[in-house]
Image 1 (cartoon, one colour):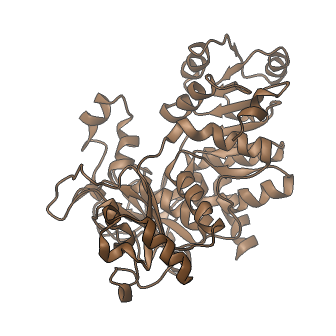
Image 2 (cartoon, helix red, strand yellow):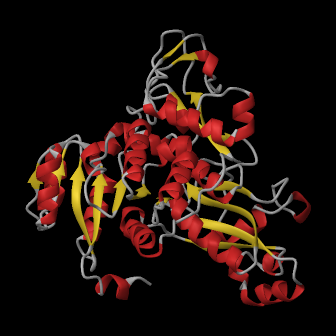
Image 3 (cartoon, one colour):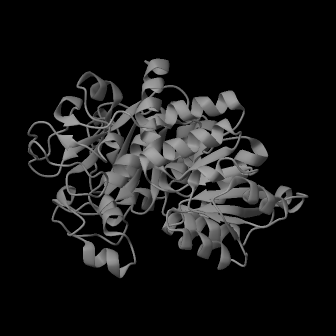
Length: 441
């Protein structure tokens, strides 16, 4: 789609990457194979990791935290490695990929990059679900693009949803597959430490996938872009085969489980007996369930959907489950960079206030004085909730559960409220969230 434009560029698109862990490093590796795009700066608190990801892709970076030498290096075609994420927001780049996964850091990096007229591609969904709407609004005012990333499940869902809506379909449900065993919500970094270390993953980060927080975070981001809320707190998350998605995520009146159309949900690969089902599973794919009131369109869809897509009971609708069996995470992120720079278009257009809030829920019985330690930690896990419910009940947005302490006891599996905790309200994330609340109400 963008190949000819990239090949014909006199100068490659200049990309910066903040956070060179597994995802950020994957972006650097992928860009190294592409025409018309080049990673010219990498930042990580582990400076050696930032330097290595550039060097191992054939570059000889300048290592510096100073703006002047960094700018001079870029003008000479020499990439920069630094431990200072803020430095990248000041450089002469075209786009910045934020991949730290830390809400406070991501909010500051994105805001500063936008102020300096850089396009921002957010792999940091953890920041987006707290302050994405105000960052997107600031970007529009600055004439740049703020976007979530292709390849991650939200980006893949946006692309499939845009395709369906462009064709005039109505979206009944949109979502992704997941894997959640019984009691996984209460997992800690110790629960899956062996698996994490065997796969060279940080145990805390790995736990955020296993305890469900990561998938809930991503679906809250999907809600805010597609303007489609979760029907219930945490979503239904049933087990089903990919062939049955269109039937399961239909209205109750049509034999499904939904009370309303236009919602998000997930499909669990763990069946009711607790077994991980390899065959016909939705994970790691994404889906969109569509419908149409037009009898001709229904006839066409019915004739095109074979029995393998859910059997004859579903063949004639009213809903059809469109399923993509994979997502390519960091591999597809450069597509969002190209889309932003070449077309000035986001991968999922975030407009307006929040539709869903990722809230913090107790992993265990918490007592006064217990500390909060964020995603994949020992204290809380995240669930997606309708924004108006979270607002009216003063529930704590998960992005503010990375630091602070309990002021009063909260039972296991109960949502935390602002009144339950003592958290630092002096940081930039809180300041930006207040601006967002004032703007959108």
